[in-house]
Length: 236
Image (tube, rainbow, N blue to C red; front, side):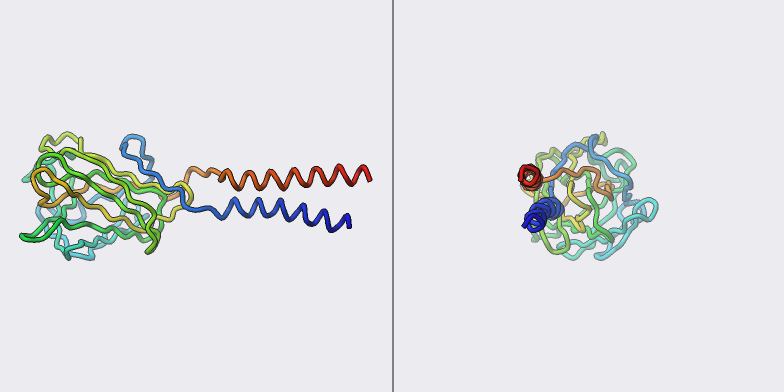
C-alpha cells in the first residue's frame, strides 16, 4: 500500500512538471523600436538600386546568413525597392533601402507576406504609407498556417527623412515559432496608394520563459501531497 501511495504522489509531481512544458504561445506586440531586442537583421539593399522592381517570390538573406526571407505580394507584385532621400522621401532614416508594395489602378490595398527559412522568436520593422497623412498598419504572425495573433497601430506618414516611421514588433515569448508575418496599411487619410517597410529585425531565440500559473499550482499541489503522505507514513 505504501509503495502504491508513493507512486501516486510521484505521478502528481510529474504531471505538474509535464504540464509546464505544454503551454500555448505567449504572443506580445512591441511598438517600441528602441526596446526591441534582436541578434540579426535583414536589409533590403540586395534587392537593387532605387526604383528596382522586386518580383513575387524573391528571397533575400539576413546578415550572417542566419534567416532567409521570401517575399510574396498579395496582388502578385512586382513591388519596388526605394531609397529614402533619393527619388522618394518618407519618414524612414535617410539612405535606407526600403521595400514597397504598390497599388495598381482600381485595386484595393495589397499586403506583403514574409516567409522565414526558420522559426524566429521575434521580428520587427518600421512601416509607413506612401501617401502623406494618418494611416493604420497591421501585422499578423503565423506558425506555419496557424495564426498567432494580429496587432494594429496608427502612424503619420511624412517626408521628413527623420526615422520617425512607426514600428511593429511581433514577439513569441514561449518559443521561436514565428515562421511568417503579413503586413499592410489601411485607412489612409489621402487614400492608400501603397506602403513601404524598412529592414527586418530578428530575434532568433526566445530569451524569456515564464511558467504558467496553472502549471505552478499543479506542481505545488503534487509536492504538498507528497509531503503530507511522507508525514503520515512516518506516523504509522
